[in-house]
Image (cartoon, rainbow, N blue to C red):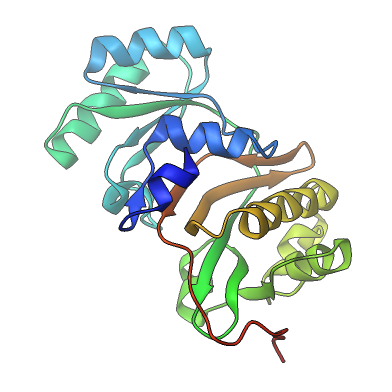
Length: 232
């Protein structure tokens, strides 16, 4: 699949292909359905199991820091219908995602990004408007070791939020480090993956749960200099 799609111009994978690719590396995406209308949203919620989240399909709505395109903690069919109506009015379309609620936690973003000098990098940060404004992201060159993964998730200035800030319970850092290693393996094995974004990753004492994923494939990069590179 990757070889076929990566051979041409950059191409964003569909939801099913993204889930399939990540599953090959032991990265599950919290169960979801894309549905066309309110009745289908209720049916999907009942199939997946309450509580659920309803999310706008378009990235411009779903990934805003104010969560305007997301409704969380829906416990019953009537709440699903109201959430669907709200989002349909907002976006002008009836299609939405219905997703099982992951355990509450600290929201993070883990990415594979392409750098013209260093090649594939892993980028990690804690989600939030202040974090985005400050550019609070940490980076590691692929391949990543256990030590690299541990350092990456502790490097952002907002990382204390993961370790039990002001009496909160620490998240499962081992699960988060394992996720970093798995994403690093994707970048190492598949140079056709030009971009991979896991957003958000909800980290909590229960683990690290991927609730959103985007993958773009394209031709592997060609660089004259194939020697080792390091970030200072």
